[in-house]
Length: 200
Image (cartoon, rainbow, N blue to C red; front, side, top):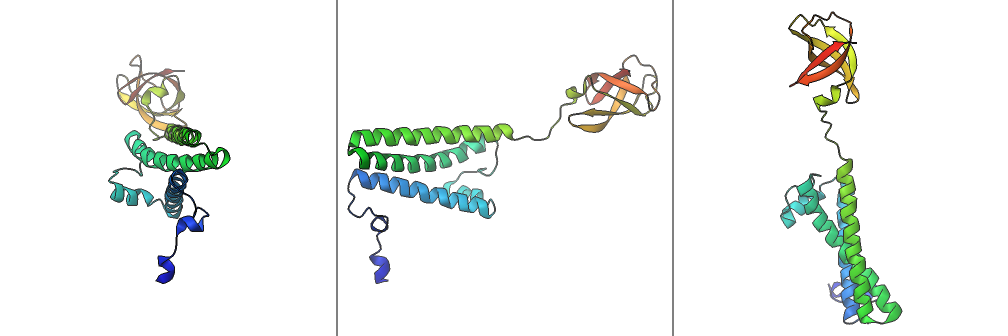
């Protein structure tokens, strides 16, 4: 127990003689770095970091990539980035120039820059996400074949390739005429979930 009592993490990292602003920068970098490594490790282990941080920080839905949840996750990750870069850049500048005002300015710029970069990165990830939903209006102009005969003034089925895959959809003839099995058709319009087709 005596060994743990004498353990000083700043002494261990070479900041035993640090005072004032140096300690602030070192503590900021240390806290931000530890939070980042913890978050990264938990995400690599299985993605349950979201559940843990939801419970600890009261941030519902952090694991989702929806717009609201991404903002909440961004707040936590932006804070980690700010602390880490503020501390590292400020400490480096203070050690290089020994000018406190410049160190605070550089640390602040680096911290806010990292927060901005984190926000842009999350925005990019959210932009890449796709829910797989295909709008039926995308079928207009697509061609296909009649799968089940379209009777006069009635509905049948057609197979049409749109949205990246072949789909079997309910269809009607645009002029009310009958269209037989296997005939080539083009989607002219849509009415609800029904395609309006004409012979090709």
